[in-house]
Length: 355
Image 1 (tube, rainbow, N blue to C red):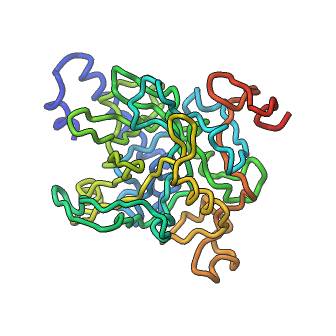
Image 2 (image 1 turned 60 degrees about the vertical axis):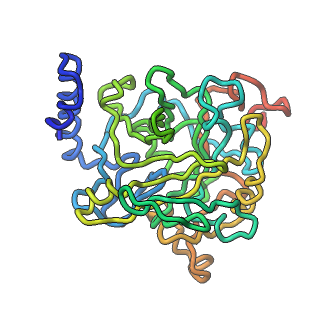
């Protein structure tokens, strides 16, 4: 793999150093036995922190991602904080109209990993061609949601994350850009997923030739400012759509992982807040979903959802996941008294804790 990468990069001293650093990461991380963002837990077959999980056990306990163990220093100051489900535009750090980041990233996006919106008559028109196998597109009348395992993730925003040089948005799952369901019932600190999100960054890198976004993983084993060639490609993509993004797990990556032909998995990400801070027509579905304690999905990792098998939901064919009692979990910088990006105060005059 390293030799193959070397043939695709300039044979400069910097490139070779980068490749050697990657070799160290790959060699040491698999022996560390740590579980981190985007890494499959082979005991359960569903990822812990997935941003669109790929279900099913793997041969080596991972989904094409080196197991990072180093906590990113800039994320360690973020603490779990409960925010109201119906005031997310006041708390999530999202990109706005006029920001330098491309407009496709503007607003707040709901990760509908259970496919809930597809069960509703008010779902958007999503008739289109979607990839099923490598290079093979098929026409679907409705969005072909087929994700096999949901992670307890909810929203993502991209405020202040854009790097014009790399053409990537650098987002930490342990920050005020990312929110999670409260799966434990503990007020304010109820997300196990949040605790697992500090060992790397998600790099949303725009391919200007195709318009598709590559979702890459950056470890912090050698610091937070690694060259782009060290970002790890695990076959995850975001395809811009009128309603948000198609979050795609490419068939070629799954085929390589499972050593057999696999159909791509996908779910939809809906823009529920636009770049002006206004709620879109998709907000209603998100709001209704957040009133449900039970999630109906093929699987949710029990290590992040300890009450999943409570009879309240299993009696209905689902899992008990949403225990936030009208709230969800986000990261708040320690000592930060202001809820909104740019240091602006909450409209009520209070900080995000109501003080």
